[in-house]
Length: 619
Image (cartoon, rainbow, N blue to C red; front, side, top):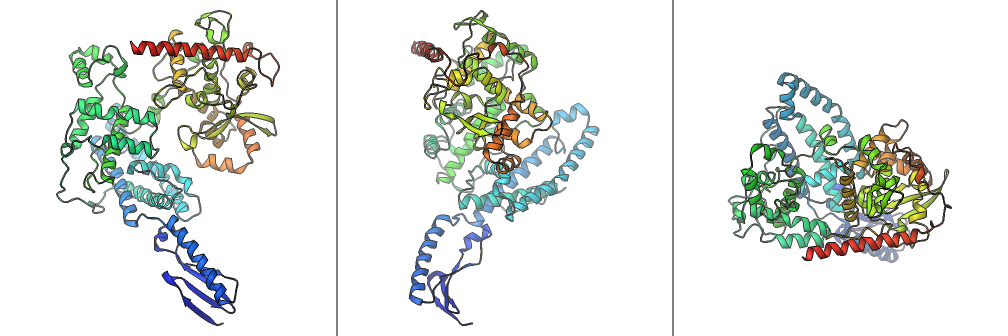
């Protein structure tokens, strides 16, 4: 066979094999981290040199453009440096926990004290042994993704957690994002090995350090407004998130002072967190405290006797974490935009309280107990009230407004408060299935990407006539609940419902700490998981939890079959209260008589109440 080559720029060649010209392209080295190496060889399907040269130039131009768009710009050293810092931080937090608990890896100090040190060490050792059982499986899962046997999204929770630890966003739709995601998975595999080691070397890897850095002299919060503007322009924060973040510098300045950057260190951060956790819960809305500065509130609380102080509910660690996260991201913003020397350790990292897990997490968000559940759904809201203005007094009137409907969607379908309150008429869609035509709620733009889903409407809600009262005869762009007037910096309808829901529960005396609308999701998930024969992927789909099982189940069936499975699943949820007296007795499939007038009336009343609130604020 005759071979002849004509060299082209940048390592590209024309090669002839026999009577046919071939195009050869060497893949850039930057793609090696994505397991793309070697070269591309493509037949130009011609023996004519001039035609082959023309086709090769067209291909080269297209590949140049493609490589410009899709070749990772991040270097291997940069990606591995970020991930190594995250691995070291995780390992160090583990070491700090062991130091705090005197050697225990998985138990907390109060748990050790409660069960005794001897029993605690035996249990801790057993738990660590159980953890090693799944270690090999986790490493195999990482290997399967890195070798291409499984898609990158299979381990999305691990990647997202690593991104949170590194203080970055990993966009897996870009080459840089995929490169960093793959590096993060290699780092996770390394972390599994390091945590398994009895003794870790010091140091594992020399970290880049700044020798005698010249610290800037500006006040720490000088660039805060720029930071907020960047977050909003990059669409990483919504308006209400940015508005809530404005409290962070105010609190820091009041509790600690407006310090220069050079004075910010770990001790200052720890003191800020400790002081913040002394504040009473929701102090800014309490008439007793809302006219005082945070520092003055803490001072006044300190003057109370011990009994009175113990009765005060203080701010939660969850809210404290939000402020610390804001400060972590602000420090990273300063480093990214060259406001401070690169390589400085972010002093705010390591001051986050770990989220409760297991039993502690269940205690934090309790389920609705049967007694409260029965009391609520047999209250005058559903059995008959005196009037629309006196909902808690027994009577003969049933008002099917948002307060009436929204709890059903939470308790029977597990949707979040804002997911149902913000829906439009057009978000209700239909699909033909083997069990008949199914109406479902199309949920998009919710809390997380995995929250986007389609949830079949529960049969009880259909029997109560929801479609007849809220769907039929209305335009697709109308809100399902127009009486829930948009409120807040990032206008939401759920705020209007939340206030009414809380006020009503207070009046019928079923308010209980830790039990709110979110608890309905726990009721739904728990009931489904305790029901035999229900696929875990279907439950995750209804609740909106991302999992490999959910993705595989969704891909296994056509949409009509999958929706039929979801409909059968959601209809297994029961409230435990007979509501047949509320069933819609009119014709199905058409607008209920008087429903349009009722909606207009509910909207008019809501607007009147909103005007009253505005007038009170102006005073």
